Figure 1 (tube, chains in turn orange, purple):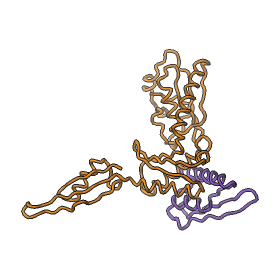
Figure 2: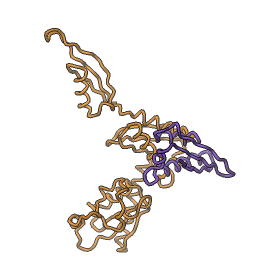
Figure 3: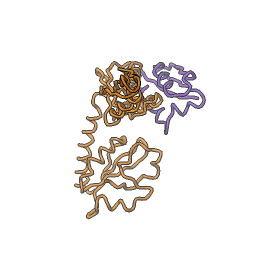
Figure 4: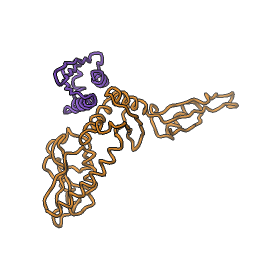
Length: 245
Length: 76
């Protein structure tokens, strides 16, 4: 766990310095006072305050939350929480129960993640939560990349559009990103809610892949990069081709 | 299972003390009825029913682990 020591005229000053150095909010750090500090007399003999600050973004709260859920589900496993890319990654390892926790196309994992996020939010842990079981997400990502590339080849050969299976927002993003560099195909999102998916279409002859779309950005257009989980604003997007950056 | 549903529901609502789960044992399936306090229904249902769906998915998985079938009904 990352930890720094700082000095200041007061404990408060030392604390602020340390938090700035760690780049965290106060509630996401543990502060240990090493030396209270004293003013001294006439500016002489004063001692500065010293504190140690350790990053501890209540990952313990998250870990405990998931451990309790697993226990109540009757599943034995270990839980690790790590902060990466501004998200709390909760990695679960079970003995033989991974499949059950993942579910079909990751449905159970997604449900778990949603519930844990809601619970965390109510416990005032506001960071994004990503739950994974046995490295499933990385495997799924590589599977989706392969599938997207294979589908693109088929689309190029046939000249006809083709659609991926329904995908989660993060999964759709993987498809868009994978095929973005390919000048011969474009991708766009169709469908609503759980059925949202990505269509791979042949790029029209001579069409510029990107910039031509930008100019006509109306209210019904958006790029995949915005396609985080904002379902509420999704209505009216069906069938529209979205620009791909 | 009852405890699992209670635990999830209580972590999501404003009035955990009003969360009640009753078990109706059928031949093949067990039906769990989740009741929450007035105003808390939205908390367990969520936007577009996402939270309710998630709780159901977790309950189904837990039931599968126990070799059972479970259905969750949410009532106010």
